Image (cartoon, rainbow, N blue to C red; front, side, top):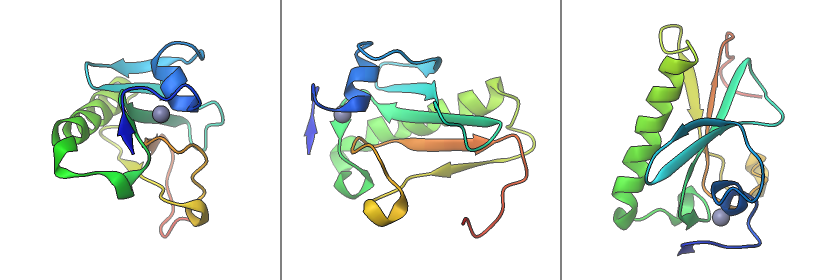
Length: 119
Ligand SMILES: [Zn+2]
């Protein structure tokens, strides 16, 4: 599903400013904000401003949106001082992944040594 705004969607409400968030980056197509329950010293979520349910719903028509999400991630990593030491970008898809909000989001995790494979 891809639409402009879903009033029932938690992250659509964040993008619209109806739910408070601490901004990490903002552009025409993407918005980034600090996770309320950080799993690392730096934990930021990057979301498209348009509603896309998850990574399994991404199509070629979303190419610009996806590119902006990665540009946002790079900018956040530089601003938060984790670009040099390294960081992780994660998309969770479906209930078994731990995904909680059905609006596409990229986790940026950094600021500590990250184990692999993830738990
Ligand atoms: Zn949404």
